[in-house]
Length: 165
Image (cartoon, rainbow, N blue to C red; front, side, top):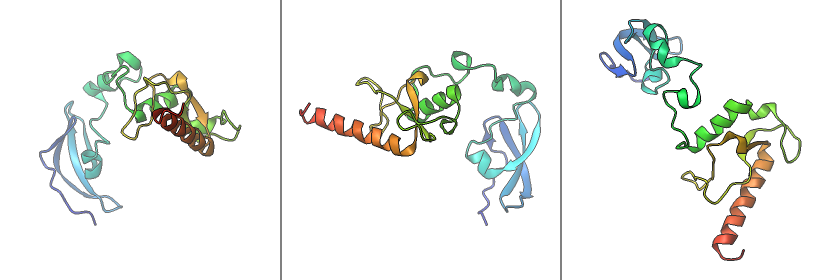
């Protein structure tokens, strides 16, 4: 059973925790919360602490959750200053899940979005993987072809670094 952490009075995004609301069927602790706009809800403490719920998205809060505000109009738009996972989410947002496409290399069902033709000036994540803020540079690949593609890119980068190419 999860250990109880008293969240009464704590703020999580637009939520303020009012009181303990018992336990869910899965035995997780529930909390009654009020949003800045006045709406109330009961939610799990883990969802509050993990940032999975930050406000009700209704009433006065709905302006902050306007689904028509995309791209530069979105309040969290960061332009080209994005991360590796965000780059892949942009591709998924534009083209849908990769599983709905076929692999560009072998025509098998795709599993992932993969950067096609990385450039030397592309940003890299902490593992050295290149990514692009431009979703049009991503293609669908099956897991096997994606691994082969990434391994080939790694070998070519190593060859360049060693002066072999």
